[in-house]
View 1: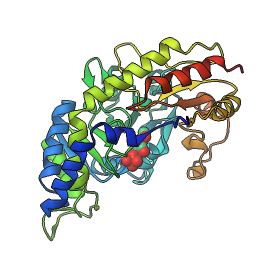
View 2 (view 1 turned 30 degrees about the horizontal axis):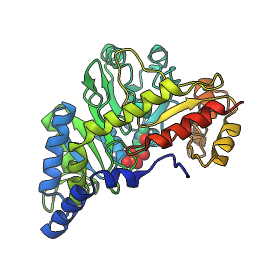
View 3 (view 1 turned 45 degrees about the vertical axis):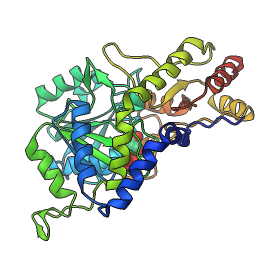
View 4 (view 1 turned 30 degrees about the vertical axis):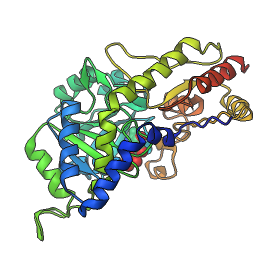
Length: 365
Ligand SMILES: Cc1ncc(COP(=O)(O)O)c(C=O)c1O
């Protein structure tokens, strides 16, 4: 039996009838872009997060770059970003011409808040915090530092739908919470999708205008915007998934707790949870020194794994122009060399979990 790192089909079959009914309803409605499904999803997702307003967009990357655009952050400005984030976070900054300033991660794979202040200059305009792998970052400290230095805070919640810090949901602390609904995400669509959550109605309105070629009224364009609309089909399907998100999160939490209890191998480091924070277990990320041997060993036993992420943004070809080299961010680089995401998905059978646990426990570095 081959065990894949993720099985998005299982997530579909869990609620197949509801997804199919909704898809047919939208297809038969004759209305496919910016309609009642998007509006309803925006209200339901805003209320789920406890944030003020939600605006649906075409992707998580769009949510990020449009956020920085509307916050007025661009050429000549600097944004603090954690070094081990997914490269899309960094692109959200650089698409606007701003410069990323990398900070090393902490032991929870989120931004090490003790290293932020030394990176702040007179050009720093914002902190972009990624709640990586599904775990909420150290938000009270980030908000304290941002407040002290008058910085904007943008949260990359592409992996953290529903994760909380001190009971408050990620995406509702900063100026803008940016979400992705890429199919593999905890709240996944059946294609691309994204959204922002903001506190102020005026900012939500700016996002609504920007996503539709800068217009609120057809053919009356106020600003040079983008085409970044969440479509009706995705919004409808997301509404179905959202009604089940709590049980889906609990299911992942149960698998994660089982892994934490039952994986016992001195050569493997298990993930840890920050005090006052929760994880929605977008990924279950272990660490080991001899990763290649573990990947090959698991692969021989038909267990698939993924590395999130093997090349940190500062060493990517895309950001070669920033001039960084190996050794500039040792912790980020160590994580890139050691992290491994093991199979974990909604609808994962007990037997599949057992196979993963047994295989990892029997591995010797
Ligand atoms: C942390 C993070 N930020 C941003 C993105 C970009 O989201 P999208 O793929 O919807 O553009 C992703 C996912 O791909 C992500 O994991």
